[in-house]
Length: 163
Image (tube, rainbow, N blue to C red; front, top):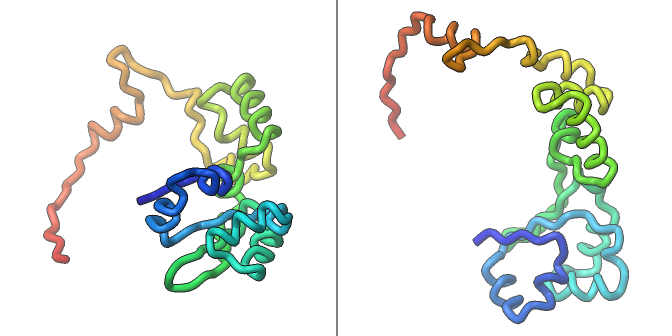
């Protein structure tokens, strides 16, 4: 069973909380600077965390650190996303949402990725994105790139894969 929530209080207040907690023995917890506040600490304790673990969550770096709680042990780990990964996967703030709307309005869908990367100071990565705006579509709806692939003489050899 996979269960996801942004707030443990959503589960804590539920009549099925014990079943959810029991059915999800491995938990990935996000950093929460408010974890050391008494009301929130009480919720974490009901999920089996001790004071040290709660302190770790409170001091962890948002969008970079994660705390894994499982039967095999507990560990704080860093997801290890690159700057590009962070720019693409960790964009959830209100300012990020505003920037997304602004870039979409100014560059459209085809130009979004390169503009987003440039807005995050990742010009080198943006330069690797192909320019989709200059690709023409023929009458049958195929782009020149797909025509090249169709015309290529590719010899594919089946390989037997053994487990």
